[in-house]
Image (tube, rainbow, N blue to C red; front, top):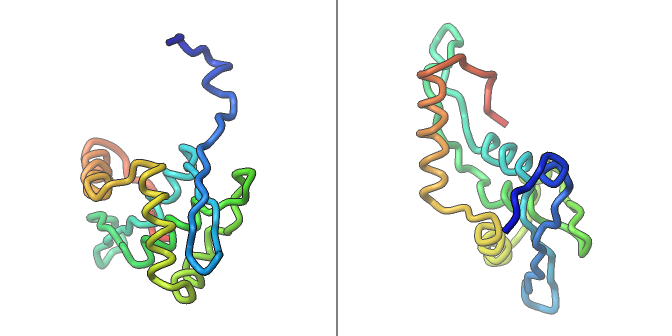
Length: 141
């Protein structure tokens, strides 16, 4: 075990890639997310609740298309390069079989250690941060 210096921490790390069998001879690759991708994914499932004046008064989870959003951030080619654009989640969600999406998401959750508790903590931590400081812009995506 070694103490990492600045250069080591800033060096691009290899992300684990897993081949996912979707049946019927089809497969995809799913990979770990970077820190930035994880933050963007989490922000995509948070929604600001505003009062009549437009002030943010709460944050809730919007789990619509949760699985497709996670798939979009983790589907890749054999070299680990993303094959989807962030806006592709709606089309993916509408067109892919639920059973195939489930297989992709199971692997994505395992690789990125995303649990139901993580989802609950995400909202709780954001609310704590807002209570103790400034509010940021909208998280609705």
